[in-house]
Image 1 (cartoon, rainbow, N blue to C red):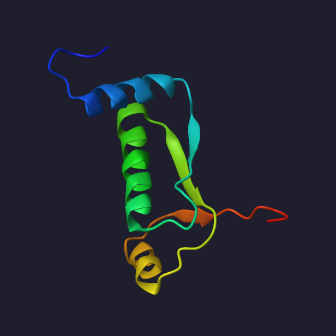
Image 2: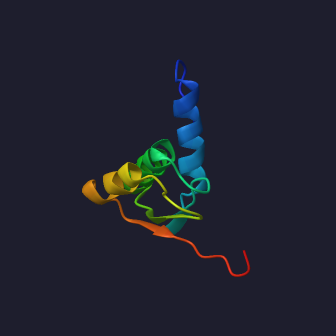
Length: 89
C-alpha cells in the first residue's frame, strides 16, 4: 500500500514486490544485445528482488554483449549473466 508522500518509483517498486510476493524464482531479461545500462538495471532489479522479497533470479540476454569493454566490465564485476540461444533465429 502506498504511503502519502511516497515517490512514484517507490509506489511502482511496492507494486512489483506485491506481484512477485509468492514467486520463488524469476528470469530477468534485459533488451537484446544489452549495453551497460541494461545490465546495471537488471542487476539492480535482481538485488531488489532478493533483498526485499527473497526472490531468487537469473539474468539472461539474447544477442551479444559486443563491445570488449562491456564484456570485460561484466567479467570484472563478476556479473552472473547468461546468453539465451533461440533456435531458428
